[in-house]
Image (cartoon, one colour):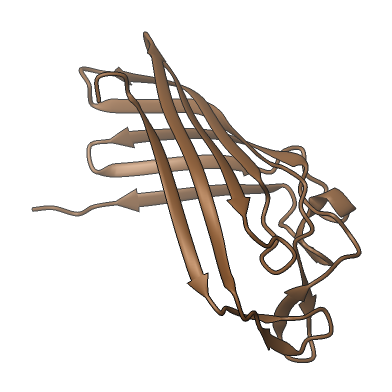
Length: 180
């Protein structure tokens, strides 16, 4: 807590996992499958500016059965301040997320499952979201532009083969808690 950060290790072992092969047939691995993750989180604050960072590196014992990116990161930089005698809280910032290249899954519509594929590598790109939030007492409002860099129909715009991620999207929202 003193350094506003954390370091963690997570190790997961799956015994004889079931998966779908590239032709959509279910198979079972007669072995152990393990995933080891190293996670580092660190937050920085300078006046009213904040930078929240998260890095994750993972080792997969058999990435041909469980394809996942080895490296992922997320960085949120924002300005936060209170105005009008602390009745109005505002945040203005951006979030950048990145994942390394990996083989990923493909979609098999015949049985509506995600299957192993070896044709296209996925990942290796970043997402940039820009946001504005404010809170007045119990009402919260946000506006967000997601995936500012993304082109959903390009090969690098896929996290699952032939299954595009949402393109640029503008979202707004309101949350209002009613109290007596």
